[in-house]
Length: 280
Image 1: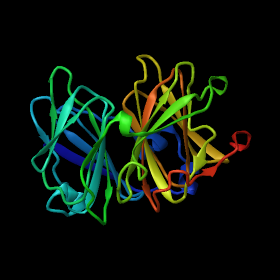
Image 2 (image 1 turned 45 degrees about the vertical axis):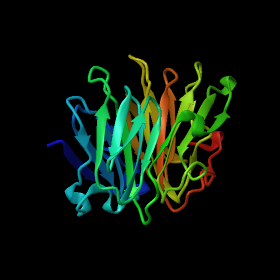
Image 3 (image 1 turned 180 degrees about the vertical axis):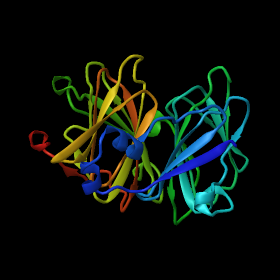
Image 4 (image 1 turned 60 degrees about the horizontal axis):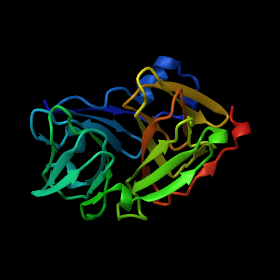
């Protein structure tokens, strides 16, 4: 089969407090995102978020529905966002073609019936990182390149968190129902992302780490601000972040990560900040 899925239940802070390393990784870490000619979804009961990768090699790779959705086609009641982290690719949406290059994004709205992923060169396949959420309205399909993103630079080299935030699929750029996606690039010499950390009870989040140099890793921090835990992550892995949890990382080198969010509102700045010296 070219499409498969697994579903993960939501965990409360009380449960997470008692988890060991293996249990934490099983509940929150998505170890394998990309596999040639296969889409393997991970569904979380936090806002019914779906995460996967599409890496077409032998030919076109079609987005197929999964039994979990009880839908005749995948986007019958959902929206889809993607960012290409591989070679040049093309996405066909109900017959319309979109060329998607490295670090470019595409939003596909509710009601689109046929989505097919293609690579321009099988030797350097496209890698479409996919996020999907339930949708109540149909918005137009739209490609977003770097020059169309809302770009913000934060942090400083002195605090090891100098970074550029590229807001790609957010409501200041285009209309979506609840899905938001963007990409944060750390400058050389900086290793901390999202620091100071925050929570947002009105949204959950998924982080996807990539451009992690060979032999290096990222330590992802999660949990309640006064009860934190950590998960060591490798290149091209993702991690689920509950609404009640902080989500921050420190790498042994600089790296890039994609953030995706869903939930109560579309206000990017709706965060409950945590003071660094009060984290435990």
